[in-house]
Length: 356
Image (cartoon, rainbow, N blue to C red; front, side, top):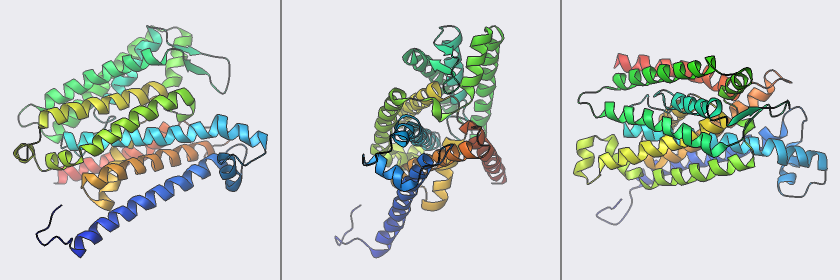
């Protein structure tokens, strides 16, 4: 931003400072939750010892194995998945100019779930094991991810087609997402009907979104894709600000709206496909987090995108931690908590929209 006298007004500096403080505060909160998430569970580990173990200075080999082999990958997976779903949600809401846009509400998550079910049942990429800790495993994660991605892209193409219809309202977009969700859910049920007992058990268990099933290999792939995608969205933050002002305004500023919309939806679908393929369906994170951040720091994409990423990591990590403690020693799938939290927010947003 340029000013005629070369000086930046104090009001603008204060405006930026408040937003940066909120983001820094979110990072600190995420770090505290990260340490706390690793320390709690069936075996309680003092937070100080967790920190020392992560720094390579702990000599307790029992705790070392629990942290490095079980809790650390689970906590990191929760953060990465939360960041990915949130950044996909904030991008979709901006691209479609629809406050209810997210991978879950627009049916993209269920499309990915159907694709993964096709891979598990028809292509045989999912197996069920006799171990309690890891009863299901994806023996070909790449084929599963590709299949889920293909069906995510089919749903995305339908959404983009509807969005190009003249006069399409946010309500029409949401209803389209509801129809797509029902369609792909019905497809998944159809496959389950013809599946064997082993395949049915594998698919049903897999659909319970849970961050604990990802290992270091899956975490690495998700981290690379989510990281590169987040960088892409940050690079295009000014384009999304222009689109928020309207398609005609954005085109007048030289933004290629069609290309930005196509690339943004494609990348959002890719993030959703990878997370769904590895973790199952985790709903409402991409819907709730951007709106929570908007109420705190506003609609400016320069701060909304990183703020939503941090909030997504905080929300999913906190949900996973609570899911491990709420009915201990049993562990709830994290998707149960996100659905309980997200459904009331979704209803509130719909009611508020109709009041407008």
